[in-house]
Image (cartoon, rainbow, N blue to C red; front, side, top):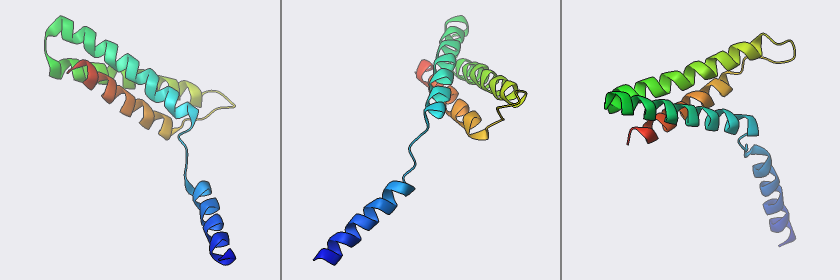
Length: 102
């Protein structure tokens, strides 16, 4: 019985190490681009009345901001271009723009 409990404890330790929590930085990238995408798409929908155009423009606007941020990060000596940040930006932009297009 003690061996079984020890094996369970060991398995839990391994699982805890393997489960990756989303870093705070990625959440900030996602949320920022979600808000930019939402408001840009909402504004375009009010101007054009087209959900498709508002989704595309909202997503594009937020992704451009994310790309600009990553390029500026790459130019700093103590920072770097992180493709995972850009991926979080793209997801956030698409979610935000789609929320505004509903």
